[in-house]
Length: 212
Image 1 (cartoon, rainbow, N blue to C red):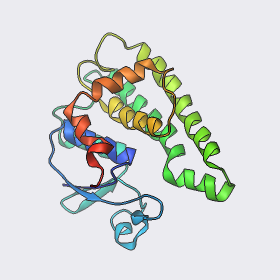
Image 2: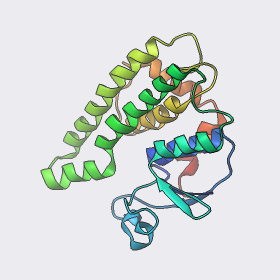
Image 3: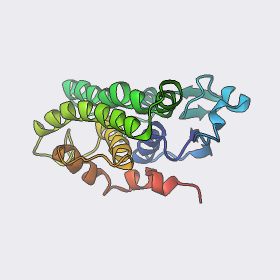
């Protein structure tokens, strides 16, 4: 199993966490998507993933992108330990939580969008940061309300993290990277703290995967 990966990509970060939680060995293939390097736009990588994004999971020569789809496949192919709650309604809630991040927050703040804001619409750094913070704030308000109603366990759905936390932790890391004040979201910060105490999350972090 190979993971085409960029150390700072939050989507790739999600997949690294899930692979670690499930104890799956994999080979990392770095793809530098930073502006100026743009390795994802190369003909070589386009043959791997025509969407020219990371992550891409390669299993015996079969390849697929999209981090949440990869998480769902990992859950089907390697069901233990599970990254979804046992109860069917809780499974829906965990997916909903993860999709709020992966579908509503993150796409509006990825490199392509921020670059377009700068180069096509003339946004300066302060404007880009305001944009970035605003979309995180909107999503986190809803997620904080959900987390506040799930108090009583270490994680949202019991004693182990799920797809919800797998999506949350990279998004909080992004918010911190853009110097966002997260004090309005104590429930989310508590979840982040609990997750970062686990080796699976520590080993998946950008700092642990940053090129030497």
